[in-house]
Length: 299
Image (cartoon, rainbow, N blue to C red; front, top):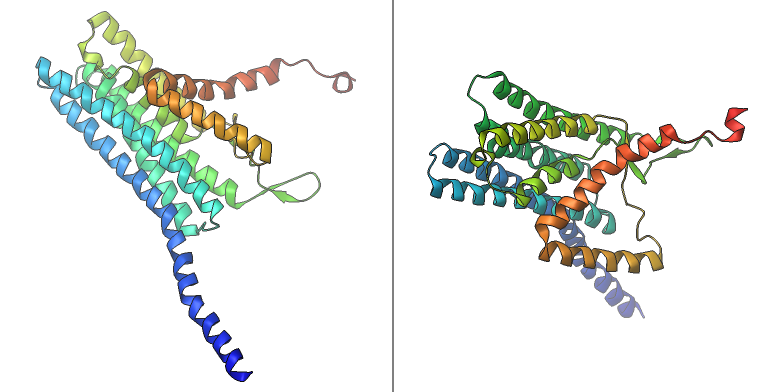
């Protein structure tokens, strides 16, 4: 009887190290996706710089190679967006969320969705379009810098809001999982990347009248995205999608369909999806402003 209990105890203690090893291994999975996010951001910056370097030569073959570098940089930012989604989802599913992981994810987002798209927009678009030292060129520098600063502020505000739950009317602390305050920085970065992926040809190759127009529109977009990130406009988070059994199946089917469409028509589908998401926040805000007041409110 005693020997049987001893064997059972040895068996249980023998299983504990393996279980601990599996548990520790689970913590590495979200970090691996975060590391992939960082690698994509680093590659995007280097590809953008390489494309900018080739533009300065002016040769037709170099301009074609520059377009390829810009396209690859845009794709890297889009891949990083996927990795950024997966690392958070996997951490929550496996219950391996850590404070270090949260901070590392924010630092990765500053590189991949802050520095990389601002450098890419400058190198592909308005950087080579205007003469060095002109007010347009200085404005391009300023807007790229402000995009980065607004993105960093957006990430800092998100971390603070996540650590300090909002007090509800009932007196309970609750984190709002249905919406984000301000445009998420990955969505802003992917919109820039989707535009460049749609047309990776550098703007310097267009005629002068179109070059000034397209460069001005790109600078306006970068500035607008920075303003949206620090705004109080709410954007859907879609974190509650797929929480029930039926909605999970529908969500999986929708994700599979969208994934196949992106694989087949990435130039069009990515741009449409991200543009609709970026625009839906201001549209809903305008709708709420012009919505008629209810009879109770009018009294």
